[in-house]
Length: 79
Image 1 (cartoon, rainbow, N blue to C red):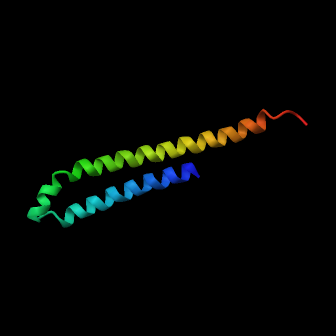
Image 2: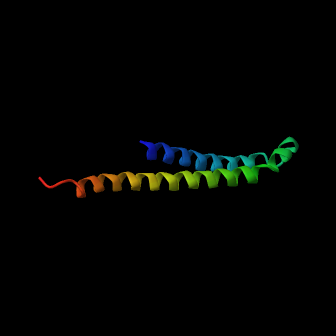
């Protein structure tokens, strides 16, 4: 469950980054949006980095969870 939540959060960050990039094309010519557009690349890249980090953390968490299960099976006392 923890890995699933991390993966969903990472995916949400990536979707937000793509949506922000699409929004950039919509607000390209607006004068008010030009001020906001100055921060858009930094925010988009930050979302991509956070999303990637969360997805990697989810994969590592899942791997450790699986390893713990195998450790219990392999190190269990014989019957």
